[in-house]
Every structure is written in C-alpha cells, then in structure tokens.
Length: 409
Image (cartoon, rainbow, N blue to C red):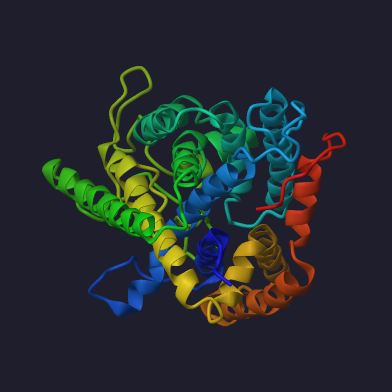
C-alpha cells in the first residue's frame, strides 16, 4: 500500500513534538555549534516549534480544501467546492477549533511551568487565517512574507509601548516567545505548502532545496548583517525564548531564555537595554538581527523556517522508504496535541515533587520520548485519533448540522 502524504506530515509533526520535549525537559546544554558534536542536541531549540507551526498550516489546508461533492445534484452539499455553505462550514470549524486550542493552551498555562505554551498563539493565528483559506496562493504567500518581515518590528514596538501591561493575552500571544504576527507568517507558509501536490518526489526535492536556501539566507544573512553593524555573532541582546525553567543554559538553550526572564522581555525591543526612551526611541539592532533560537527576528525565523521546510521534505521522502521503522514517530505525530499537552503535565508533576535535580540528566526526557512512542503506536493502530485530537475535532464540528462529514486529517 502506497503511503499517503499524511504519513510524511505525521512524521514531521512527530519530530517537532519530540524536539520540543527534548528542548523543554532536557538538561542544560551549550548553544549549537557545527564544530562541536556535544552541542548538536541544541538543533531542536526553537526550530522544533517552527516545524510544529509549519505543519499546523499544512494541516489547516488539508482540513479545509474543497472536496468532490457526494451528490452533485445537491447544491447545498457542504463538500461541494462551488457551494457557499462549504466555505462557511470550514470557516466555522476552524474558528471553533481555535477556541478549543486557546482554552486548552490556557489550561496548560495555569500549570505554571516555565514552558511558554504555543497553543494560544496557534489559536490566534488560525482565526487570522480564516479570511485567507480560499485566497489565491500568491496572496497568501505575500501576506505570509509580509508577516515574517514586519512582525518582529511590530512586536518590538509593542514590547516597548506595552511593557507594563499585565494581561496574559498581551504577553503570551502578542509579545511573548511566540508573538502572533510573526508566527502567523509561519502558519501561512504552511498553508501554501499544503496546496502543493505533496505526493510527488519532485515537489519534495523542491521543498528541500527551498528549505536549505532559506536556512542559509536566514542564518547566514543575519550573521553578515550583524558583522556589518559591528555586533558579535552570538549576542542575543534582549531576546529570550520559550522556556525560563531549569533546563536552560542561556538564551539559546533548551528552548529557554535565562531564568527569571519574563515573556515580555523575550525578543527584540524598540528601546534597547543600553539606552533610549519611548519618546526618543533607539533601535535594538542586536535583537532584530539575532539568529539565536527564539530570538523572534526575521533572520532567525527565516533560518528556522528553512530548516522546518527541509525536515518536512525529508519526512515526506522517508515516509515512502522507511515507513515501518519510523512508525513510532509517525504515531507521535498523529497524536501530536496529546503528546504536547502530556509533556507539559509531566513537567508540572516533576516540579511538584520538589526535587529540582531531575532536569540535570536525560532520564525524564528519555522516559517521555520512549513512553510517547510506546503508547502512541498501538493507540494509533487500534484506536486511531488521540484523545485531545478527537475532543478538538468533535468540538470543531459541534455546530455542524446533519450532512456529509469529511475525513479527519
């Protein structure tokens, strides 16, 4: 049986979730350095979350693409791409799904772990994407590129103007480690990728070449710009990242910023730490050009997005040739939301034990990674959809009336 394109997508999504598990639960480690194999584990920092967002955009396309009408004589069939009701149904499902993800993300945030939960940002990005679900691909690509370029500047201005705001929505979704404007650009790139004929090897190779090019331009361009400005390559300025917990060793490690850094302090600011005021602002060039994980700058996002595209392309290629060997990772990808939520619950449970030494080794990380594969593989085979995935899917269809229902993705 020929693997479907969803096999490769599940594989990429599984790698993204397991990468975040390693980044959040793993011990402190130095920043990534090609010349030092002991730092290679840091490749998951930041890039796993971008891959997760990219896959979310692809899934959004697959969930909302037009399908052949089950009854061509029935113009009211929601699966008929020519029926206005079909677009309304898809938009409503995405909206309700976004609400469900936001609620789930808020509940995970209440656990008060150092991990900055990405689900609320996903929810906001999904809502913002609704008007573009059937827009021309060129339009979606243009809006996505604009979000990636202007998002970091808008976020920097917001962090400077709203630095005293205490609203968790403002800090978590607009100004935090996953600012909505820039991450919307990543989701929109996934929306474009999902429209490609992903079964074709030629498309896989094109995605791989595009990803490698974007990674080189993003990371390499950022380093060159910093050199031109007289900035050190590894300086992160005010940038932080997605976790402020014990598994951190600096702004670029373990998906984390330095301990004690608030989400609003993560990423570039309009007012640099070295001076400037809101009335006479200076530009935080160090933050806006940083290539460190979770820096939130355009070079960092472009480089991480390039890596994500390359990993997705390799996953689509590998799913055809090593399906059985990679089945556990694919199963984790199929239950990505459940595994993501579970690892945050595990983090909270470990912290609640009062033993702060668990984060100094790999035991907790390996247990969660291996356990996720052992549980997800039989669950996916014998039960199918994961519990949280099923809950979100049913919630998204709770407002549907009687009629044909599309298959889950």
